[in-house]
Length: 70
Image 1 (cartoon, rainbow, N blue to C red):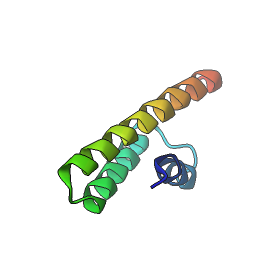
Image 2 (image 1 turned 30 degrees about the horizontal axis):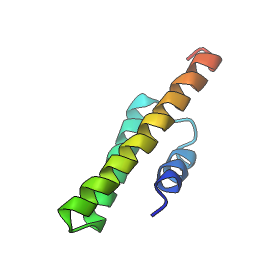
Image 3 (image 1 turned 135 degrees about the vertical axis):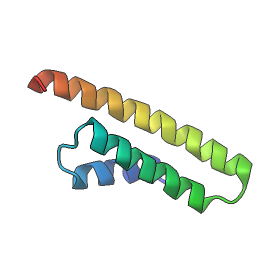
Image 4 (image 1 turned 60 degrees about the vertical axis):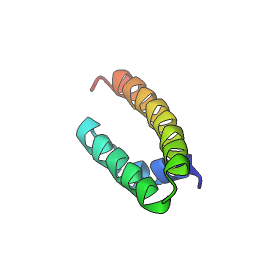
């Protein structure tokens, strides 16, 4: 699964989401991963990858908010 696309598509659909909206989107993505993998080891592996994607996205969002003075 392309985790970057999963997160990016949902964030893009939300427009310019604030921190609370982003957190809700990330929670939805986590829930989707949990529902996709019944094997605990694989699920944890994918959740770890997703957390890396989320951290990168949050850093980007914070940077952009700083540029726009939000």
